[in-house]
Structures are given as C-alpha cells and as structure tokens.
Length: 125
Image (cartoon, rainbow, N blue to C red):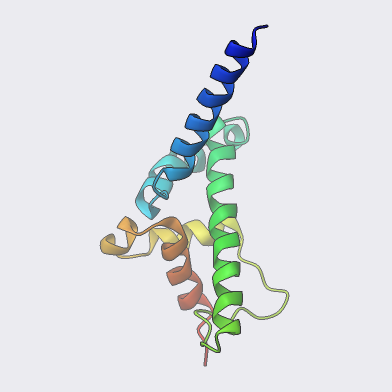
C-alpha cells in the first residue's frame, strides 16, 4: 500500500469524524420518531440498527446531564433535579416522560428534554 493512499485514507477518516462530531444533537422529537417503530415491536427492537443508535443517544444525554450536575454543584448552583440516591429512570419511563412534554419542548436537544423529564419526576424541594 502506498503512503499516499494511507494519507488519503487518514484524511478522509478525519473529515468524517469532524463532520460526525459537528452534527447537531438529536432532538426529543427525532428521538421519539425513531423510537416509535421499536416501541411498536419490542421483540424485534434489539435487532434493529436504530436500537444501538438510540441507546447511544440516550446514554450520551445521561452522561451530559451528569456532567452538568457536577458542574452546577461545583459552581454552587442548585441542581436541576434531585434524584434520590440509588434511583434510576428506565427507558420506558424516560420515553413516557419525553412523550408527555409539550410540543415546543420536543424541539429541544434530547439532553434538555430529558432534563425537563427528570426535573418533573424528581423536583427539588
């Protein structure tokens, strides 16, 4: 293999990674739309390529919210939600909460919509 080919391949991979990294975050509405067929047929959901993509989106939103929580705490700001220690929210509850959001909130990035769901479910008192 020529070094010219390797350099071209490396540049192409870098461009693809940059384009993927620059992609806007998935909205709540887009997430729900892509999840609808999987929810309609849960037995086939695990074999769908969308399952892995949606799971990755949900996991990324969760990681971002945890990072936001830590940053708010470090800055002395109040938390967005007060989730009891050891509590988690499952995907079914997450989807139900996202479904219940008003139409305007469904245009938000998934992380922000999920923050609304958590704040409603686990309000800080």
